[in-house]
Image 1 (cartoon, rainbow, N blue to C red):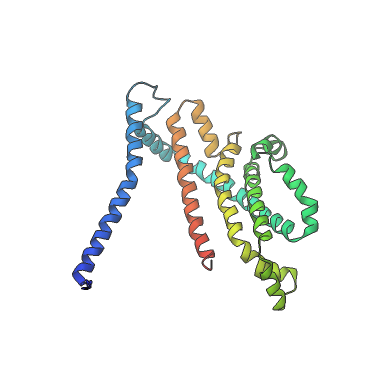
Image 2: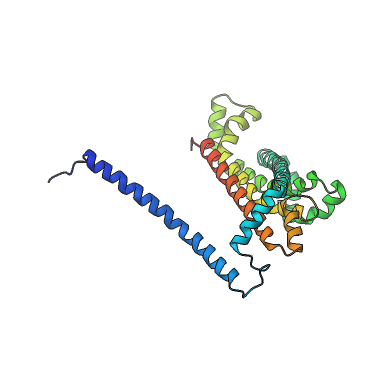
Length: 268
């Protein structure tokens, strides 16, 4: 039986065909997006709906340029990012701490879990009236609402991750001379539970943006409040601009965290 050998010419042809297939695949992925924009433009230009109800893609582009030129877009984005980062820092850190404590110490689990479970079904927006009374209209108020959403997600994932650590790993650590709780948690439990913890953090990144908009619409300056103001003036093209900005920033955040997660879990 004759065996076909890969000559340099064949290798070059193979690489060129692979490159063409890659470009065609990427182009095909854009077809639904382009079709959506075309249908959107057709509906907006048909006159069947008022312009404020279905603004055209071109109107959205013009609104984006106007918001960017006026400085409102960058100002509101900066304020919202401040709320977002601070709220996530609070919620994620406390969620991981409580999840680790309740999963590792039986007495803490028996004492605190009923309270955590009792408050968990309450949506973060339900706390807004109290937060405004306690903290006023300020950065910390929005951050607190975001932290609630991040807390429960990280708490549950950390709790499940620590509870799911293989007892064989802990027994092996004891055999090797590691008997302190701090050492076991640092060297065995946290690394083993890290995939579940990182999943909780990643979910919290998305929940944080949803909670952010809900927190800001009550008067805290940022993307959410600007959307409400624009909606009140029927400037729906501006509303869409801020919706797109939130979606793009959220997607970029998720991609960045996925890159970090892949490197932290390289051992897996």
